[in-house]
Every structure is written in C-alpha cells, then in structure tokens.
Image (cartoon, rainbow, N blue to C red; front, side, top):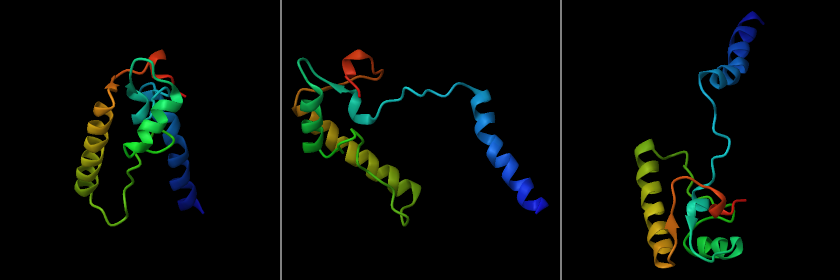
Length: 106
C-alpha cells in the first residue's frame, strides 16, 4: 500500500508542478485554424480543409499507430501536412503563426 501511495502522489502532483514551471498556453488552436484567406467563412474553411485531408475539428487527421516508431510517425506527419499545405495553398489560403480574430476559431 505504501508503494502505491509513493507512486501515485508524485504522479498526481506532477500536473501542479508543470504549471509552476511556466504558464501553459491554453489558447493553442488546431493546425487547421491557422489557415486563413480573404472573405472566408468558418464553413468554407472546414469544407476546404476536409477536401485537403484534414478532420472536421480542424485537426490534421494524422494519428500514431502502435507499431510506428517516432521517426516513422514524424516522417508521415510531415508528408501529410505537406499535402495539406499544397492543397490549401492552391485554394489561396495563407498560414499564420499566431491565431488572432482572423482565425475565426472556434
């Protein structure tokens, strides 16, 4: 019982400790929210995003499979995002690093 307590307490406190190391940015937007263009609507971007291979939550839709190494995962993710980027560029979207009101998210 003491071993279980010794393992659980540090795990439960680790979230509090991470917060004290530095602020956690809770305003991070999904990858798809960073794509904007003049005159777009939320609905228009979601439709274009889905056509380019993203998910309805504006995520990139790429998930790690249990059999993948980290290298395989990141190689695949980079390839997937490159395909999305090419598609979104063709639809005249621009990527912005910092999402502001122009991201129209959520």
